Amino acid sequence: MSLIVSDRFSLIIGLGKTGLACAQYLALQGERFQVADSRQYPPFLDQLTSEQPDTPIHLGEFAHDLCLSASQIILSPGVSMQEPALVAAAKAGIPIRSDVDVFAQAARSAGVPIVAITGSNAKSTVTSLVGQMAKTAGLNAAIGGNLGEPSVSLLANDVDLYVMELSSFQLESTTALGATVACVLNVSPDHMDRYDNLMAYHQAKHRVFQACKAVVINGDDALTNPLVPDTVTQTRFSLGDPDVGQFGVRKEGGEEWLVKGLEPIISVAKMAMSGRHNVANALAALALGQAAGLPMAAMIDTLTSFTGLPHRCERVASIGGVDYINDSKGTNVGATVAALEGLGPDLAGKIILIAGGVGKGADFSDLIGPLSRYGKQTLLIGEDAKHIEEVLAGKVEFSHATGMQEAISMAHRQAVSGDLVLLSPACASFDAYIGFEARGDHFAELVRALV
Image 1 (cartoon, rainbow, N blue to C red):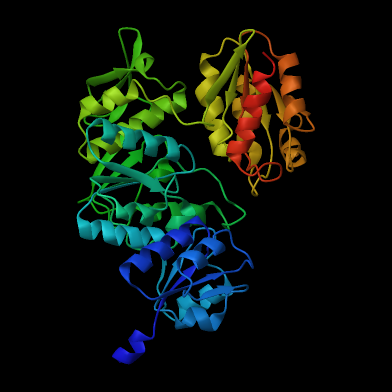
Image 2 (image 1 turned 90 degrees about the horizontal axis):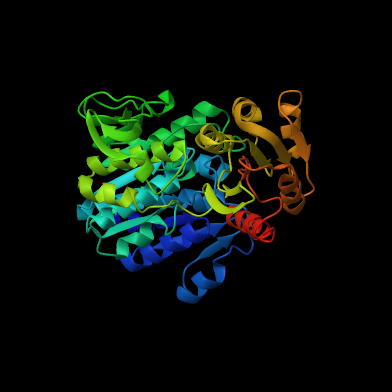
């Protein structure tokens, strides 16, 4: 029996950033492993062969025999579990795990708490905000997962707290997270080109709650409410008036305040981030930080200085009384709705929205309501511009632009003082850019050229 076990190995599927990190981690642990990638020349092939020349690497279509020979499969998030070889392995009882699973097992063994954050939108902002709150409190906090460093890469450091952004793709093959506190910030349709329906996507997100000790729930989004035992501590945040001990918003002396029950925390005006959606993000971070044991003073201090992340409702310029906002990270409909609802109510004028790109099978009808309330014009660009037009036609004003440059020129001509030009595409960027960052940088460059 022992001889059979000794011949087994871990199989890493996917040689992107995550796969390389897993290979480096397993090598440090002295474990036997092999690597497979469906591409003939995956991005980190040269680095792996240089660092570990004796590691077996299999390129091309995933082989059933290879997968069935593994003791476990560590699956990169870009690879679907519906690959035939993986389906066969799962049926044969081969454990299929994510890098997050490997990370979580090691973190729990070391006794280091984990804050696990997922959601359709705002997870990078909230993860970064909680991480900064922890650092302000004097903790050595590691931030990563779907943001920055892969999970297993963080294990090499001496850490007091892990603050992890997790995607639905990562969570699909995560089976034993066991976070100290877990949260699904919000759920709106995304990646419908990978999931059969919203329920399948929702179920993937809710895997973040596996064996967690505490949860944070968005009281304004019923889809974030988990099925967890009564023994799990629950905290809610909401943009409304909260119950005792919960987080919300209340008017005090003519000002809006973030509050915990009846206790004022900080006025919205003193926050460095702007927009209604960022009020919700701040409340989520406060609830998560409290559950992780962070001191309130450090969290308040962070809210007065944290301005947000690049490409997330980032103010680029104000020209002739018109603000230009880069929300290129708005890669799904829910994110764009959040930006419109967050920025629209406080405007003296209207929003000119630049939208379009790769729609990922999304339903764009949720844009109609906020565009009717706050929109002046929607400028459509990219691969799915025609599909968005079919949804908006007869309901809101829209025009087509050949690309970003023409869209900004059109917006500049149409905008008057008090208006806002918003790049929040509700789509991925890969039809025209290498990523949302490049799209946002191009927008910012063209806007600054207007000055």
